[in-house]
Image (tube, rainbow, N blue to C red; front, side, top):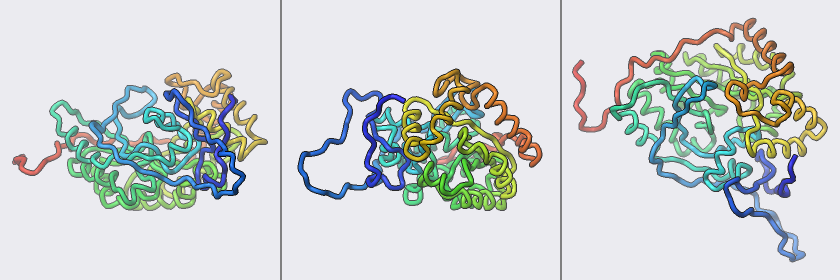
Length: 361
């Protein structure tokens, strides 16, 4: 592992995932903490969550990745307070001039006009309907959504015009929106994916510190399923030599809770995530660190990560094949390997604004 700036004192970062806050890759200068020279004992200030607002000029993001089952997504927030140390979205914070480390989970950006911009983009004449994915970068149901309600507002827009939506989250706040999601699901317009990495509450608290406990996420699967909302269990990420022994148990628990499908993704360490992950391993699991990294490098041609399409989500080689075979066997036994029906696009109608003439037919 490359030399890194000193870690932030643990007393300053309770409930946080990253241990460091090195400057983003686009910054000319690095910010480092330095002793002021005074021999005076002082309490170290704890890192608090800061939220600033951004007036979005556009909302729908487009992609052409063959690895993804969607071509468009929206993100109500930038950064994520959940603080999952493995989050592949951390490097995106560098584009804001912020650190992918602790800044990613403490310096958040809310987009309060997201629903307004979404309405405008869905009304455009050139817009052609297809499912919109939400939660593919940062979690739309992270803690600040409880007060901000930006995800709720966007969902109201989509529900109002019968637009299909696929949501991925670890947040139990999604239960708040069952009143919108259940009617959409009844029309074939909505699906939810709940990500579950481990059933070990202690490991989960260290690895994803502000995410609801695994047992609570399983309860969310149950409540969504009982409301008629199809739920996919997402075993993501699978961490070699740390969470991979739990693969079958996680699938069992998800099936029992009511999930109707399942998927998995191997741990990914793009850009700054690799160094952050290794620093976290050194603090929490030093005895396993070498083994975990060796397994990852086996799957990526000796590198920490290989971003090639068709490869980055699963890796390759004997270990990756074993995990894939274990998943297929267990998912088949539980009936979680079925192909789910696509979301409907034929019901979509462009959002109306006050003063618009209603369609008589």
